[in-house]
Length: 224
Image 1: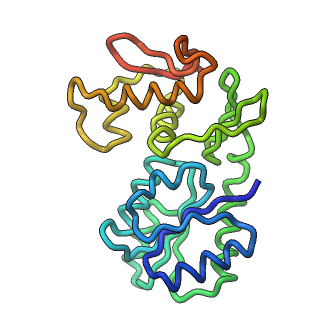
Image 2: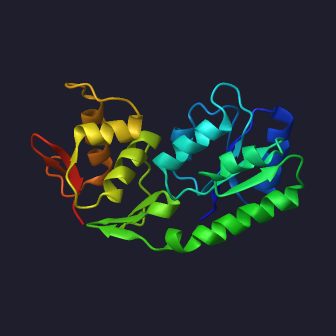
């Protein structure tokens, strides 16, 4: 299986060159020119590379959001900023920080180190009924068929949050506020719709779910 990298860089010349070099080294690359949609694109990726200076949301904000959504996802920050304050700000959540300009070999070496560091977590799955969940790898495999189950970014975030609280009953408010970062409005059906779609992908019988359990009047939980 090839390793998929999320790469966020708004400079087209740099983005084209770096993406091409990484693909030549055998990586699959999802290149975005802004931080919009990064959480969706990160689903199924094994590492994120973020430029700090981006239009709209800066790389620090994007990185912090990705780390909340995918705690096991290694993040490498890229920046022309060389001040110690900027590096310290990035390293509050990121796993490495590389200043521009950099040689492609150095970037590749940093990526390899981060992937090796997280490799053990990626290789040991959590087994839930008929599913093998590779939390560090952001992958879910159907055990009998070996087929990968593809989730959207929001679906991954919801399921990951439930897994981080395995066996615990979580309220709709807790889940919504953790995933969307906004206050839950009573009667909002957004979470319920996402749970329904999740069950359609994860459950053998979505009408009788065995993985994502509804606790009536409270919320949801995933049983260990």
